[in-house]
Image 1 (tube, rainbow, N blue to C red):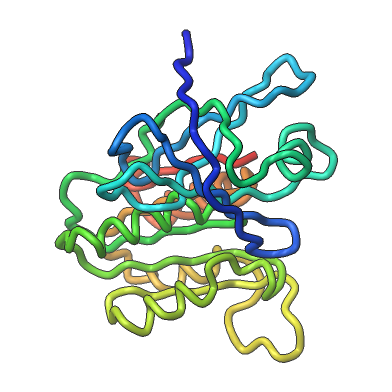
Image 2 (image 1 turned 45 degrees about the horizontal axis):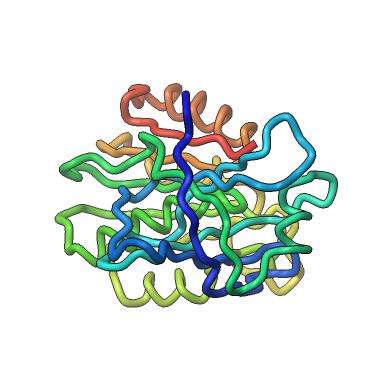
Length: 238
């Protein structure tokens, strides 16, 4: 299948954490970049590899402009992200294809939503959350269960805390596997958190994004709880 790339300009780069950057892109030749929350783009890189493109979920919500955000973690042993860290600068243009993917919201949200993420897997879920808020889409409760190692790994921490305070229906629950002594929130892994929230087996739709092991285990646990596979959407980040 032929991939159609367009030139996108990097308009901003923000250090989210020591190993994570937020890249903001703009398509200069068009007024709008239409995509569905949850979709991803592909970036083609000038690297020495059989596969030169890399896929990244869009972290921003659709809007009335042609700007979109990607949040990317550095893989020191890889080829793609070290190239970005060393070479990407504001003003550069890079080939970008998309939007791509079916990891998207239903037309109508009739049940509670449980968004479960690890690492930069929060990106498409953040896009979904902001889209629901921005478009005032009817919905029920929304839970974002975010598995991280330490507090510095909680991407979008302040933003999510503010949204949780502002909107009573939104619950942000970071879960740390390596918490420090001052941490008073959930610790361990994400599984016991969503199992406790949905112990009543009420109707819900689950969106999983992040590390493969987390997703595989979550799918098994949710089906064991009685949820149908059609209620469990997922996107692998490994």
